[in-house]
Amino acid sequence: MKFPTAILAALLLSACAAPALRGTGDLGIVIERAGGSVVVVDSSARAILGRVEGLGDLSHASAVYSRDGRYAYVFGRDGGLTKVDLLERRIARRIVQAGNSIGGAISQDGRLVASQNYEPGGVKVFDADTLELLADIPATFGDGSRRSKVVGLADVPGNQFAFALFEAGEIWVADLSKPREPKVTKFRNIGSQPYDGLVTPDGRHYIAGLFGEDGLALVDLWQPEQGARKILANYGKGQEKLPVFKMPHLRGWAVAGGRAYLPAIGRHEVLVVDTATWQEVGRIPVKGQPVFVMARPDGRQIWVNFAFPDYSHVQVIDTLEQKVVQTLSPGKAVLHMEFTPRGEHVWISARDDNRVVVYDTANFAKLAELPAQTPSGIFFTSRAARIGF
Amino acid sequence: MTQYSGKALVALILLAPVAALTADPSPGRSRDLVRMVRQDCGSCHGLTLKGGLGPPLLPETLREKPAESLRYTVLLGRPGTPMPPWNAFLTEAEADWIVRQLIAGFPEETR
Image 1 (cartoon, each protein chain N blue to C red):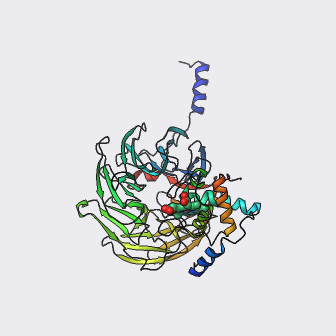
Image 2: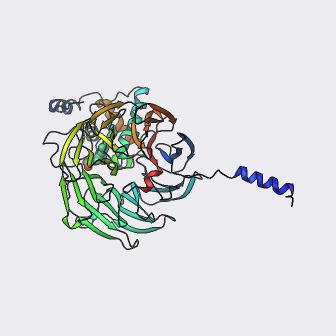
Image 3: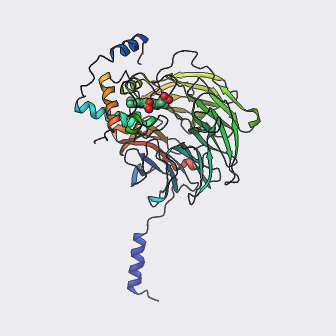
């Protein structure tokens, strides 16, 4: 039988119009801080695929991924939570869920998205499909009349979320195995002014960095009955602190080869701690106040960027030598770094130069420069499969 | 690395009230300052200055407060809180200009 020509033509046309099938494993987004937009990028082609606009105030924005790697959940400063479809490059859903927000996390089973809020202080949990509100956990403390800012929200195994309360000096672990009935375990008096937190890549330890004192607070989530304990206490040895012009960020990327590499507060050092004993085993002098201290996925290198005024440099620590082996100048105001899934390249955003620079991590050669408007966070879909990302 | 000596701080505090603070920065410098406040102060106070780890820096929240003490906060920081001292990067006149702009409604960045 012969196809009528019209049908044949229609078939051919639709085949041309349909987007090529593709996976998302090498895709990601770059936040454009000032414009309220994100660009969708392809880390294999080292190319920008398109821009998605209308995400609100993205100063201090961050993103997590659906476990199929198709959707990015972008948390904006203005409380906006936007679900971005990377394949269709459009906003799939968007809500404004708080007055002032700082980031979020996605549950182990991928079904819950949680947002950590400054105003009103607390955590809200949403259905990952519909963004319907499932649970509201106000961060009340003291006599119950005050609410604390929430920092350091991380997903931990068992569909739980761990987070810290800045003003209250507490760590909370919320069990959302029944999403509408969260069960919260509170660790009190964990230290002064926790500013961020991380969960180790195995999901076992939650660590909150402290701004108000030298040290970090550690909870063993396998043995929560042991309570929180202080690690690296008094690392400043009573010396006067240097001013901190930007708060450091903690995530599970800090752990490599049985050691955690952590930013000191008010000291231009990276602190090295053994993750078996949680004792300090070294400290590495760096160029400025560290902000992100990130291990390359294989753990051989640690890349560090800095707070104002040293923020136009990036330093690389070799973990065998335990010292800085390279200093790069990717551009003015480096805000973030992201490794390709297996770490052969790193993407670095230089806010004031309006570009993202891609380096080969083996030889530090510059591979590409991509234009972006005031770029800040870079988030690749490989985060979808990692605890604490 | 910048050192902050106690003496310099005392001198600053003593000198501040008598120093002439009315001179506006040059157009080029004021562009830099606007960017600095929106972007670098913005990392704690928010790009829109509606607050973050630090409180909002909006006319309605600052208007009632004495400009002079706000200027000291900017220059010297607030010990015991994350608010750092900016006196290594800002002159008194510049800090005063920033505070006046904040109270009046801070300009947007021009690009």
